[in-house]
Image (cartoon, rainbow, N blue to C red; front, side, top):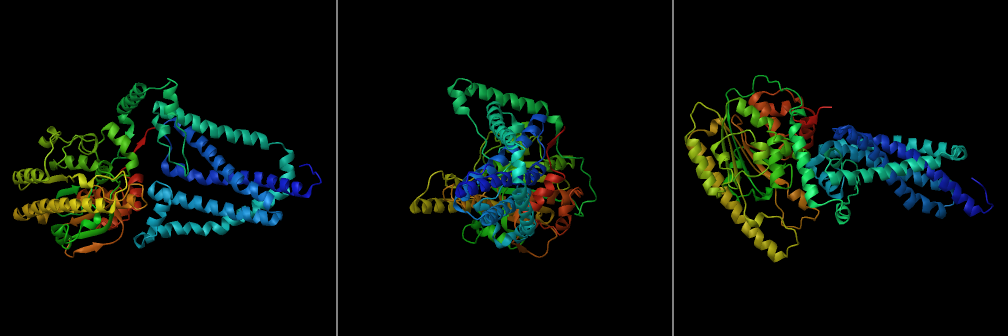
Length: 558
């Protein structure tokens, strides 16, 4: 750096030069920490996808570092004249940023998404004490990060002239800028061609918003709706042709002697848009009374905020990030496959019919029943209950069965895309409560039938919602949580003492529990102790992580 004799100018130049190299070494740290995202998300399925993962990591990290430098460090160089104070502030800022990044990687590991104010608010609830504790452990790294930043600061200040003399700053800047440009141009191409190994990486890194240009390409005549639809169909056909390369389950399951002494029937009752606070003596008097006789999970969450993916998480025990792969390839859940192998009879009843991806393309894609043959037929909730009662009457006493009943909600349970006035909210709530009460009466009819036929003592009863419901605008802070918070009531033969369980549970917990308790699956030791007590009390993130790592994980052959 050439001295000009102007104290202010020379001091600012020294600080800016130091800030450049300090930011560069922090870029290296950020890139190394961000490798955790690739570890937890898994490598892409193709060499191009893998290359994009690492190039986009460098490009995105360099962009974030450049923003911090331009917005914070560069102006501070003209405001703060004391180099030690300037360096101290930079160290504090970088320490805070790296700590937040490490915390975000842990949240991504647990939940497969990034930290937001809404998620942070959710984690502050008393029920999330274990999750927030595992996250808070990472704050121990703060003194270590601070020491590393202090060392980098000292090194760069002492060696800044040497680094400047090597003239490597410009090539490094060109390389980082190139990776940033390649990242976005590649995503534009992948989005236009629907190249899934890259498109699916859209949210792998925090604050990542890859560029798309469908409107521009369409305007220029390079892309049309017909071309886009054709490419989507080509990708779907390719996926179907490659279905044998999907590892689902990850490896062959092994089983020990089931925990249950005698085979048990299973009935799963699910209602669309059933919010958790409806489980009270006014809105659902029968289910409220029933919850006092079994297990009542007061902090239970669906795997999604919509019906389709809520059902998906219920049958697969997987987070909804796997929804496209499953439905594109018509892959049945391992639970249904094993029930069929164990010669269970199936009784499937849905008031909305079965012509939906969550049924025909996934959950029941390999099941053949009269109900599925008439999959387009829609019924009222009462008609579905009546058909189930007729079906259960025909079941031989010595044969096991699995039954699923889905009850629909009316228009009052539809999501609100625009804000509602207080009067409109009150009207919709009243209508919704009437619908919930009608569903409660149908559940009463099902349970009463089981009691009359003396089946309840040998039947696992699971009653829940596919998703929750909020009357707030969907963009509000609490809407996401309320749309996923659903009731869960379980009647499990052999449990003598009714319990109310306040720890957080999720739909992803149910399949591992059934696999262990019914069939003695021993491939997932993380939840074995819980299942032996016939309680679904593992936190959603623990089960989700265990499921992904063990029996229910999708990964393509390399």
